[in-house]
Length: 338
Image 1 (cartoon, helix red, strand yellow):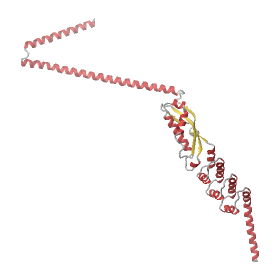
Image 2 (image 1 turned 45 degrees about the vertical axis):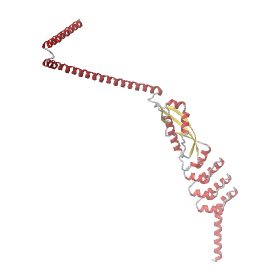
Image 3 (image 1 turned 60 degrees about the horizontal axis):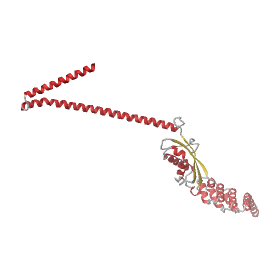
Image 4 (image 1 turned 30 degrees about the vertical axis):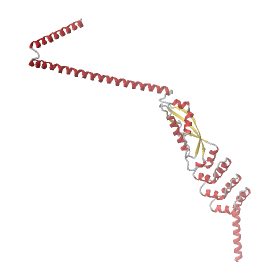
């Protein structure tokens, strides 16, 4: 076969290949050119070689150009190759631009690659989001808090948050906000003197929690905390918790007074026993003193300080006294018997 024929065949094959490539990308290239988002045909071919969807990149660039945002296809390709959601990032940039929110492509790409929905973040920045505290699916009855007077309260709150774009990367999520708000509500109720104060002024609880700066180091900014529902927890199937509590307190006071009375009674009995012991002790001392009298008389007789007649006279007086006592005792017994 002549060399010219081989060359001609080769040229024809190359021409058909080029036509096939151009036919594949011509539609995308024309759509970009007509939309004012011109993309080089070689760039489209390079995207295909790099396993990047040219249609996706072109559509994203067209949306940006129509929104008045200048962004090269290289940035979109880089984010696509990094595993990001290009369309979601583009929609977030357009929404942020329309809402006058300062959001760069680098930050939007970082938020998207961090696993957060950047479009939802922009939407939450424009329209604040309401979060139930606690989560009704986990704690349907609400937060369980106890005031200083011992009354249990069930509280349900709603937290209105706005996404903070600058702190969204590396900031805590909704779960942290719910946990912090719940902790703040329980602490505020626990510092209240009575449950009546909480029921009368629930806004004081929400205001105190809001002033605690619970949105620090989070990806959200707390707009407001509203107490949606607050009720007294039931006790022992009794509806009137206050009356039940007063009854229990009265019973406790009664038992305490009874215990105090028993204590005083025990002290009185102990004191009585002590006095009896002292009486016995005094009697023993008297008996001991009487035992010394004969010794003293004997000593007086030996020393001559008392004569025998004095001793007999003393015996007569003692006998007379004993007789009188005996007579007096008999008379009292007769009168008692009569």
